[in-house]
Amino acid sequence: MIRQTIRTYGLLLAVFLFAGCSSLSNRYDLMGTIGGWSVPENELTLEQRTVFFNDRSVDDILKKAEIIESGDPLYNNIKVIVMSGTPYEMGFQNGRLNKDDIQTNVYHIIGIVKSYAKLKGVSEDVMDEVYDLIAPYIPIEDKLEMRGLAHGAGIPLRVIHWLHAIPELSEFAGKKQFLRGKTYNTPEPEQGSLADPELETCSGVIAFGNATENGELYHLRVLDWIRQLGAQRYPVIHVYRPEQGNASVSFSYAGFTGCITGMNEKHLGFGEMGYGNRNFETLEGIPFVFLYKKLLREADTIQEALQIVENSRRTCSYVYQFSGTSEESDMKGVMLVSDYKRFETLSDSQEFCDEGDDKCYQGINDVIFAGHTTGKLREFMVEKYGKHNLDTFKELAKVAAMKGNVQDVIMKPESLEAWMVNASNTTRDEDGKACNQKWYYFNFGEMIGK
Image (cartoon, rainbow, N blue to C red; front, side, top):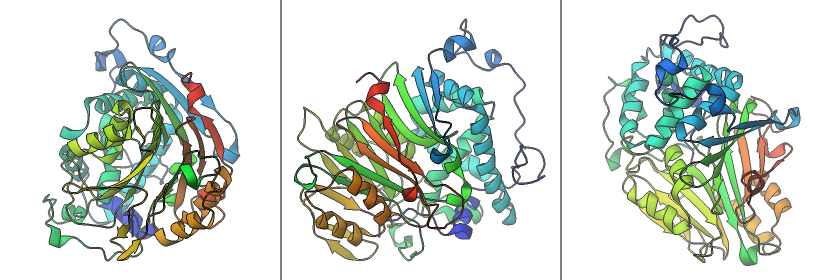
């Protein structure tokens, strides 16, 4: 099946254990009295630490940004942060405006990583090794944004780097190598394995044209991850208005600048899921969370998005789903199976053979679908074919969601509207799943004047 390499709680947290931060502790004692950080606070002033400010004051940078707080517990007190300027400035705005939540969320997650890694005696320098492998391929814009976030939030940059290395490492087939002498080797194809039935999985469905009630395009992205980590307690919608590149929106969490789900002003939507194929995976490439940021900034059409991915040095096995409407193209949706050697695109009418369950699924005109329960997704889309709308897609989220359902987003790229939900607790109960919560409406177009 299509898989996001995350297991049930104990095994899921073991994934982070491979990201090893054994002597890293939680400065805010969110995991109890563990001790002090191995990375000391930087005592230098902001102006001494960076050349990006020069004669400008902090106020000059912050006045170009805005934070909108819902203050509504039904939405997990979701926040919208609108950032403008250079990548560094936008990162700094994010870090300073949402400082408390960022510190709490980042230190909590890293504290859990540290706690479990310590059980295996894994040193934190393993996480530095992971970041060193991916760093050469991270766009400079994203490195500057992470640096700005670290300065704005008052968190060591090294810790921000660790946080952003976790998603790619959790997908990497050879992560256990780091527990065997911390020697990195790109695995050969025969070392791959699909025998992992308990892995959590994401899902995605795109419908348009004859499949929907009014011919409108809907794109559902279902994120099944680790509810126990609690990132969903600090949901954030990041709105970027950069000096160069497309304006975009990313549905995220406090302290994380990478993109897992997003849209840009060119009416494109982006969703992702891990793929169960363990073959042909490497860490020496651009992590998908930064690849998606690049797509948001640079892609004007689905074809351009595909070209950017194809020309990039890729890493692990993923299924990407791109949706959108453009005057320059008739293509409204595509699915891409990708790893560091493979680049296979599928249109709506093509048969999809899922490597996880060894089954093939007949395509549906004007529908693109894949996920943990690909067969059930197909049945639902066929049953209500021609009648799909916002309500059916909210129902579809429940069909797709697993116990670890952390976040769901329904995007309408044509109108730049979106609906977002996050899990309500940190257990694995049915009621707390994201799909069973109240949907938060967000109009990206209004935010950027479109």
